[in-house]
Image 1 (tube, rainbow, N blue to C red):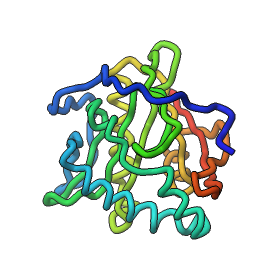
Image 2: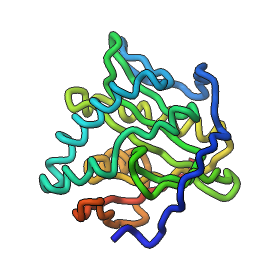
Image 3: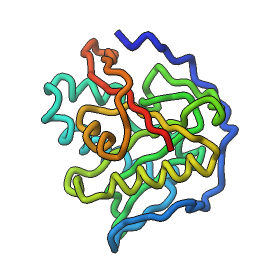
Length: 207
């Protein structure tokens, strides 16, 4: 079963929509010739390809083949993050190498197709911002790119007034987040629509 904390139906409004210009509120540490930029709707196709490669290859050492297939029923592109202006990509010569974002909304995880989503605005005085949808192309994993996006998202959340961040990690992503100062608060399983349970880890960090 899904964890007892069930998300409400999503709100279709986008009160946090931002323009296309990206505000850098923290130092980025990406090796040349990589560049980070705000994602746009035109990136959705390339993001789907990138995420599919990451899910298919990076999760396999941690999950059964059935659980990897079930992960596709849960994970994927969340276009609301793009609309809100809080999703970023790292690219090299126009090719996407990694992606990730943060959110002022209550949804913890899941693509547009995931049923348990909650677009409720978070209160930065009492609630934690979300780190969302972090993916790295398998050919570029363990090069510090994911860590750079994560740092950028933390800086952006801090600039927006949040003092804590939360995320839901896959077993593949768990070591990175732990190395970046996140601590585990809950292990749980999410049952995909096809009936297969996928293990996840809820984590938190004070900024």
